[in-house]
Length: 437
Image (tube, rainbow, N blue to C red; front, top):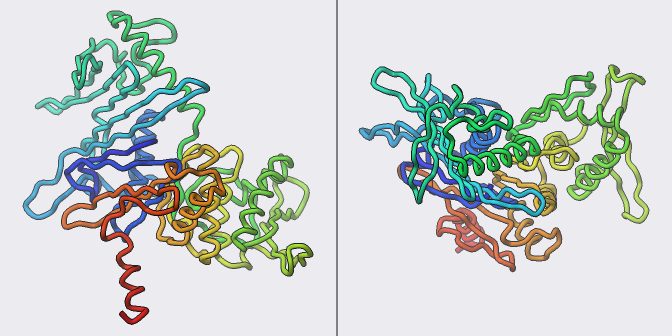
């Protein structure tokens, strides 16, 4: 995703706002300014556009409540909005082909939850909208429109629906056979576009969303079915399954984890210790650190994950997701720096740059200046291949009635461009006080 636009959503007000997304996007600002809500909206838009499902705004790790909690409410005598709208723009490419997609969704109240009553796909040479409207008798009517001119939409025959507003890729074609009355040229364009969307959706996993607080470590684990979750409960079983069943992939992931662990000084080695030879036997996750000069390191004892600093168990799920070979193309991370020393936070910043430079998109809510400063320095020094235009910093500034999102960029020297006057004002005030001015 390259840009997000929203209106009437949560604390962001009734005026339309846009924010630039990049391969690496950092969400910064005070508490309770909508950063987590912003992450939840990105996942919801993905679900509507590519999974073609009604998004669940209460799904872990984002529980935004019911409709009244999600739609913008200015308070006082002002009326709560009766809809909210969101849009994303994206460059979708396969091999040498690349085209621009804009997806727009309008949500209304359905049984106290947001329901997408309008979905628009606009790409190169086509535009398609699926909509649902209620009449005076609370009956829902569904329909389809096509883009026929600049901002001009025309209704298509109702039989295009085939009796189902979802999913979009059923519209116009059942297999190879076009529905009657579809304009030929438009039908071919829609077919090609929806086919591309289907390929994109099937080749890209749903964004990974992490919770701000990860799971507590255990002394011994029993094998369990690996089901991804935002708190990282699944990670020990995932590592054990990989170590037991795929030695090559385990060694690749193990090396990546150990490189990141050493850079952050969390650990130098990691292993899965099995208590038996079968997949059903219990196991432990153990780490150890080295001491002395790098040329002649002394290896310390293996220690259980529960016996080392809490930062290791908090960082391990994030590191695993970023480094696993079958990971998704998009990550939505909440405060990955929790419980980490500043040196480890800075090392995470370098890892984020490396992963983003490798073709994945990271959108990270953070309160860590150490992460931000490391990203700025790595871009300046060219250590990871990430370019200035590959980074976006979104500053969420609280206001009287709504939060304003500022898109800040980084130049070739690592300087911030476009920061509002209030950005980092707290740190400036603290520095002034500390030197007695």
